[in-house]
Length: 508
Image (cartoon, rainbow, N blue to C red; front, side, top):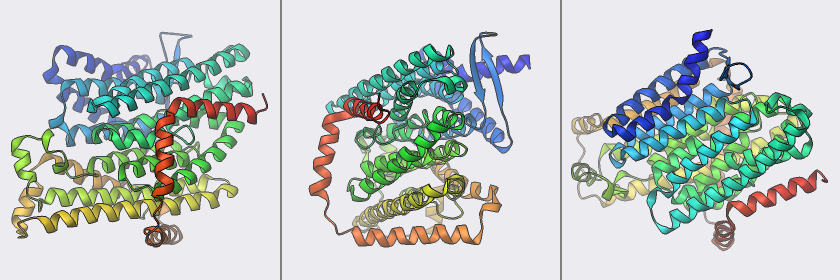
């Protein structure tokens, strides 16, 4: 036991240590980072197969407490896989500086997933916010700088609100542990939850998500959607499991986020913003269930990383590629582009909850864990999600076909296609990711019932029909003014508005 008390803290801080080593030895940071991520992904995957739980205290008796359990391990696995996907697909665009940011961010995520005290959670979320700020500003233009400072100021305000709630909770309980919040006043709980919801990107606190996701680099958007917005899910799930008032409140906030954000995504014409609104909706679904919210967020994060990574063809960014890769991508018939479309479709279907994909399993768990009153609204949100991704799939295929038609070479050679497909290491990452989404659904065959499969297929079909029905509606006159207003107002005022609404609701 004593060995584990040393090993687990060392593992949590290992990514940050590797990142700082990269300052001195920049050439070794990529292989060390990939090896670390592979180790974390493998160990957390095996932990998922059993009921693994281990609690330890840092700095001896009375120190900082952590718990690596069913709340933490799914998110550790999802974050590790997300960073592996990004590192593999965009390796030729990065310097060691980017890897350092991601590895420090990973340590902040590990702490936020496993911390069971409010102060450690505050420190990890602040560090996470600073890393996210650097990722958002990665494009180095005026708009990305505006978005990054908007995120930094909004996140700072959210954490200030959170910290005020922590101080008030400590005044009444004399403890910073989550389990002791049962004795905390409603005001403190309101302030703490407001900060966590902002970090998680849940409506109304998640209105910063679409704007930032749509403008950031695709690799940064993949990390933000796959890792950063999951940071608040574990503590919210832990608190919902302990406190019935928070669990009941999360049902209300979750269904509002799921439905309203999905409606907005249906009428959003820009794919990046639509994916951002979809994240707000999906994370609203994740907070509905304390038992399965973390594993749902894991599945959503991996799929979102694949979606942002394959939303555009590689030749949409020719300036960031080497001369050899640019020549390769000038061939519009490249099988790699077809593979990217296939991965985009599979990841979209997984989020829709299509049978025999990972999303089907997690959505079924969430559905069975909801109270009866919330299931109807959950079904409505699932239908709207299917509509959103039916449009995204249609647009992605349409762009690919247009590029195929504009290609000068329309010849097809099966042998050459296979050779091209397996000649690039990046293609293996996409193939393995797709295989994972398919194979993981067979780990729980008891969920693959006739009724659940029929329900998922019908939802997908109805989503496609609804997309065809609304595709001709021109909502730009409504959508664009609201979008401009949200971009102008930004996160700080939205957080303040949510806080005031909570305080008025509690009649304080």
